[in-house]
Image (cartoon, rainbow, N blue to C red; front, side):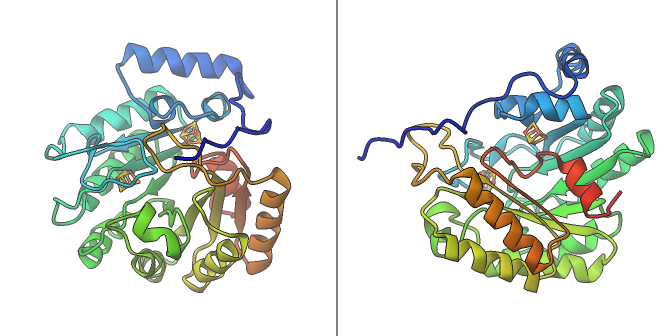
Length: 292
Ligand code: SF4
Ligand code: SF4
């Protein structure tokens, strides 16, 4: 195999953040209450900033995925049934941490009839009851094979922002997202927007998996054709030598070009940069898009 590419200088983990005191307080509360965030578990480079801003991402429905995407670090296996105590636990955490903006995501649950949609809704309801002013973004799986039932359930009590990541360009789906389907993911975004027109829709891509810039621009146009309003694009970083290799490190200036192109296409918010993750500065993006 080829030697891994060297990381350029602009890929580095930031320490601290906009509010170091708040960051430390959130860390302490998480330890005290035995809570787990994606932010810490994925060693996200933005954790100082996000915690400092009162934003965090929680994973629900367990930590075993029914799929196995070769860029992803989540464990694979037979998941446990949804934990009925989880919605209350997440809601208590959001309240204790006084989060202003929370992102709720999950593994793929191809084993559940509704793909886990009902559990998402229970979590949304519980957070709203305990923290009415917290903005809730759900980063959902593709609900493939069960889209209608999942959307019926989800639209009964929708989030403030519905995010579903396309992750990469269609040519690379087979390799990078086995089990997923590009056209289906686009259809999910469009169908959700049609049912819940007041809820903002959002999607995200990683670069460095083998795509070209032309292909990225085609995906952005496809997203707009499917009524997606907010966008994130970030650099893929291989979690280990056993994951897909990084094919290129995109220069920060090229990310600026992506962002310009996105705004020109009509996205209301576009966060593009090497360290952008789909939940990075989610509150600011939502502000820009007029969601909150
Ligand atoms: Fe990871 Fe999502 Fe793929 Fe599961 S479906 S392996 S959580 S990227
Ligand atoms: Fe957490 Fe997302 Fe922020 Fe990373 S970008 S620290 S995962 S909220």
